[in-house]
Length: 168
Image (cartoon, rainbow, N blue to C red):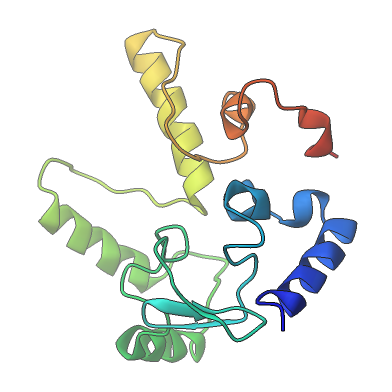
């Protein structure tokens, strides 16, 4: 039996309907070692995930850094379920935003105010704009993925790669 039989079948299907086989370059199968490393995740728990072939793997990346407490942490899951029972995406600001802002300001004493954004890519883009306006500089040093921005696009692939395979 092949170690990745179901995973490889899933990968071929994925590549036929999603450019590059993944909706984000950070999860692209060819950044690792296809045939040796996993290409898909079926479920996760704690520090591990299981692929479609029931192989269990240590998740070194922990959901690209988002699962710092591990997958399916019971305390975090309970907090999420409690909030979901109240709603999850509001039209107007909620008390949770003020509570989190207060905690952040208490822990990071260098700031007077806090502003939240919808996602990390928006925050990085705004930070770059603010830094450029403040310093007058135009160049940006980038060492890892920071969102799908024009100024960053060239950093997503190695030099010499044909971008046409990855763009719609």
